[in-house]
Structures are given as structure tokens and as C-alpha cells.
Image (cartoon, rainbow, N blue to C red; front, side, top):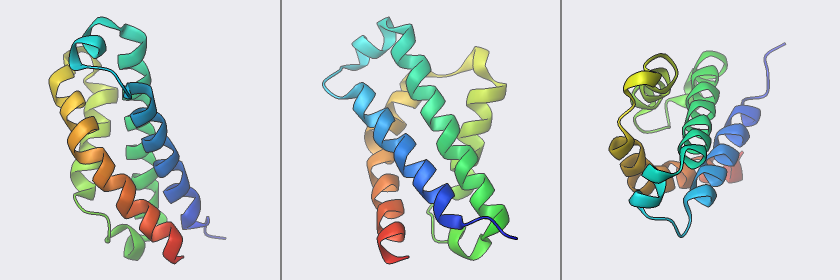
Length: 113
């Protein structure tokens, strides 16, 4: 039996919400100076990437509606496998500029399911 694709969408949107919440009211300088905040945000990005990667395996027709899915999964892989060379400025930029859009796309998908 195929897993319910909504589970992966819910996991991704929940992780996005958490990551944005962790950084709410914080500056990039706050982010740089707080190892726990960086670790928490990175962990949520890892969950987003893994959830969407799993979605692409169980429901590629649904996953195809997610913009830049290959880049999202690649970002997850960099965070996990290239942990020693993570670019904090890039993580912050994705958090502030890309994540809200992705979260909205996924919310719309969940609302339409």
C-alpha cells in the first residue's frame, strides 16, 4: 500500500513553519551567533528536503507541482552531507526569501487535497 502523500506535504509544511518561527524577530547576526538556532533551522530544512524527496517517490505527479523540487532536495543533501561547509548566508537567504513561498505552495496543495 502506498503511503498517503499528504503526510509528506504536512511534514514539509510543519517543518517550514517551525524554521520560520525559530528565526522570527531575529537578525542574520543573531543567526550567526546562535549555534542552536542554526542547528534547528538546518534540521527543519533537512526534514523539508527529505519529506519532499519521499513525496517524489510515492507520488511524482503531486511532487511535480512543487517549484524547484530538485534544488530543495539538493539543498537537503548539502546540509546533511556537506555539514562542514554549510554557507550560513545561503541558509538565511533561503529561510527568508524562498521558504515562505514554498510553504504557501504546500499549504495550497494540502487545502486542495
